[in-house]
Image (cartoon, rainbow over all chains, first blue to last red; front, side):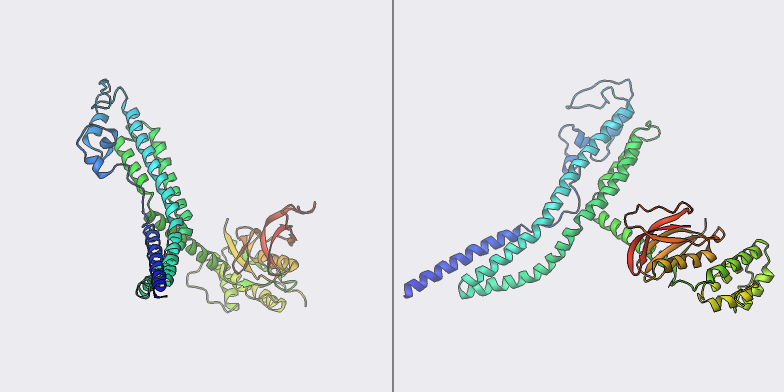
Length: 332
Length: 93
């Protein structure tokens, strides 16, 4: 019995260790998010002194590229990939478009890989944590007492980590919006670049194009996307507040007969405004217990009075306004 | 065009909304747009024009295919709260 008990304990401990390994391996899959695509030109490639390549030349817009760009058009020597300091017969515009086109293609490739990875990472993190937590909890139940305590402690800690990663789940849900924001920024910049590439070099030089393609590449970062979405949300709130302010209060329908009297009052007030009869308009405003601002013109007085007329939707109240405005209220 | 926005309560009936529009038009000029907001229906009025002499009519238009009667002209189509339910409407005069 004792031997059987020891064997069972050994098997249990073995299973616990196995599940722990699975759990830890799963947690290892919880890779951190990468906030932007790999750069088209890596720092190492840009500084690699061995041999000539377009990639290296494109690194910092160095003197080689600029020298080639500014070399004479009639210098059509063309030494293939080994080394060249001429434009191989291309004119400046063609060379500019060649360099920028190559960079754009590379940037698009990096961006495509970045967004693909972003989608995969966002889906993978939560699943990995689930597997990890499950493995640790189950391992704790199967392992010996001391190991079980350790595993249970890790699983408990993982519970806290889960709360953190649940925030990542929210992030997962925002990934499409973030990608959309990056796409929008890239599309705007791409349009600028493509429009520029149709211009002659004296209007859109390689240097100017280079600045734009760098902005194009930099637009594809999560930081910029979050910033754009935050700004957009803030603008929407501001628009909503402005809209709410412009509407003011929500009211019901006026009593029957009110609209007809109001039409006649509006007609009289409009005539007074057109005639710039501020004296009569002021008199009406005073009759309505309104305090006309000093120096108010006929239009300001008209609006002040009209807003007051809106405040009473009853027929009796409107008739009273009509008397003050100086029209027949009817109904007598 | 100077625009003025005004809000109508959500619980208005079809005839109540028509009366509300007429009441606002009599002060703020003809209705040009009707839409819904969080707190109710919002009408936009053309402040630069004189109030219309004729009252508007409101027709429920769930399919968006309704047309004004032959004697009427279309003012606008949009969405409004009718008895607290968001609905498509056609406004004619």
